[in-house]
Length: 234
Image 1 (tube, helix red, strand yellow):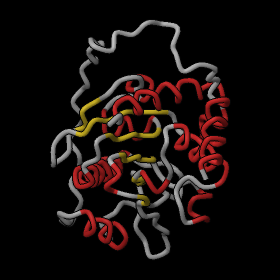
Image 2: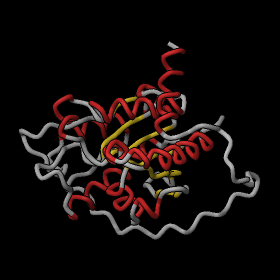
Image 3: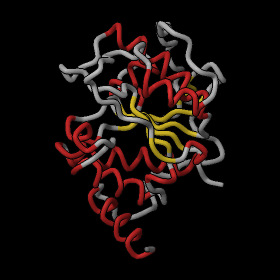
Image 4: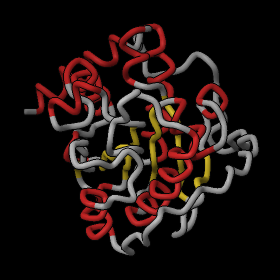
């Protein structure tokens, strides 16, 4: 089991271009550079019906409510997975078409890459909490502005109930919806994401699909994972 974990981690590190764990540029760990201020996000639109105030109830609500954008009798929904008590929550924008067919987020080639990334930071699917920003994939494969506002309100409530030590957002859509800035501006530093239960430390990284189509971006994703590991140290 341990050798498989090590092989998976080494595989990700090789793909990310990592040949040393020591950076060339000195970093003052005792006096980190203060992050740039995060713009205040636009107000989220509240869903049509009240959301449950506990995590188990919210998960049941997400699986059944008609108030969820793109809900219909024929629209499959992907539920959150993993351990909400793990301290690490990750949020994807929406299920890919292959995820809908597989019934799980991050399936296929993207899923294999995701599992190598998790192994590189000493985690697995069982030791994180993974959720979709939109549990339902829109027919057009894009989330319209009105739906973004409603889903952002739901996501903030969900994140507040899960109360992770750290939240990792995948991609530009999640960054814009929850932090009011593009991924390119949000990456590389921590943000305090406001939720009804208080602020949650949040990091943004690159979508798995982009990492697969542009392998050179894996070095940037590795830098994001290093920030994440540093924050989650015991």
